[in-house]
Amino acid sequence: MKNYTITVNGNVYDVTVEEGAGGSAPAAAPKAAAAPKAAPAAAPKAAGGGAIKVEAGAAGKIFKIEASVGQSVKKGDTVVILEAMKMEIPVVAPSDGTIASIDVTVGDSVEAGACLATMN
Image 1: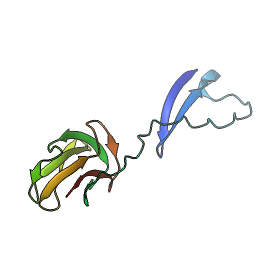
Image 2: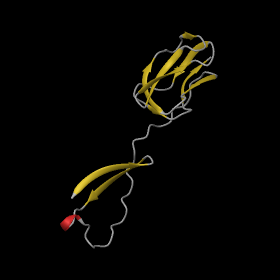
Image 3: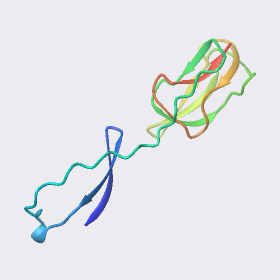
Image 4: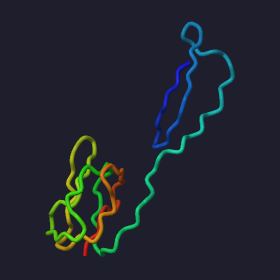
C-alpha cells in the first residue's frame, strides 16, 4: 500500500492505494471516497482605516512589503511585492497618499482582488 496526498480544486485528500497481484486492482468493492482534510486557510483580514485600497492583481504569496504605515507614497510606488508562478509582481499605489495600514504579512497567500493595504 502507498499513501499519497492529492489536492483537487483546493481540497486536500489523503489517499491510500493498494497494489494487487500482477499490477491489477483486486476485485473487491470500491471503498468510500476519502473525506477532504481541512486545508489551512488564512482567515480574511479586515481592511484597515484607509479609504483607498491597494489590491492584489493576481493570486499569489506575499514576497516582500516595501512600504510601512505612515509612509508617504506617490501613484505608482511599490507597496507590496507579490510572488506568483515564480515571478515577482509589484503591487503599486493607485494614487498619491499615505499608507494607513498593511493588512498582510510576508508569506501570506492571497487571492486576486484581496486588500493588501489601505491608504489615505
